Length: 247
Image (tube, rainbow, N blue to C red; front, side, top):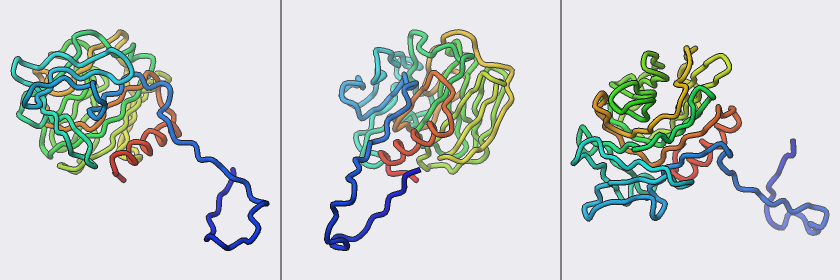
């Protein structure tokens, strides 16, 4: 593996024997197909009070376009984490957006997600939904010990994460062995040998879904249509950590 050494200017009088190396910026893995970023112009539709009525995937036309109830719009905050916008679903107990169409791929083929979020302690947070809006949440965080649900009956406990703190959470489901794993900023938290993930397309829900009440802020939410390798997860975390000034 190449090694690079930085030396003070003027150390060498003849630098001709050295090679200029261009640094290539990191890019997200090509399996990224849903990327919800409130900082992208045009991806947010909101009213005059910054209440969000539609949030569009920056990589396509898929969108979160249905509120949990008629008046349950999340709040767009112009400057939050590292001066960048966030979607505040902590603005009341029943805020939500979900997709009117199925936008998640067949989860049984393997999938991954990444979220930059802030949740207070002792709260209930639904991140994405596996089938109907009112049941079978694939992923839900609740109480002080946050939990990810891979299907309607299996839960993967995160342990007690710090409340009121911005975190980078990644999760993977590997169809080989049906293994679910979840990480907090690169540290493996827990593993579940699952019976399997849903075998059809699914709607995506952020926030309240009539079962879990969401109390959370998102600075970014991504979905990958494959199981990310450890190296790919490192790239995802490095990019997100750099953008949002997180460890």
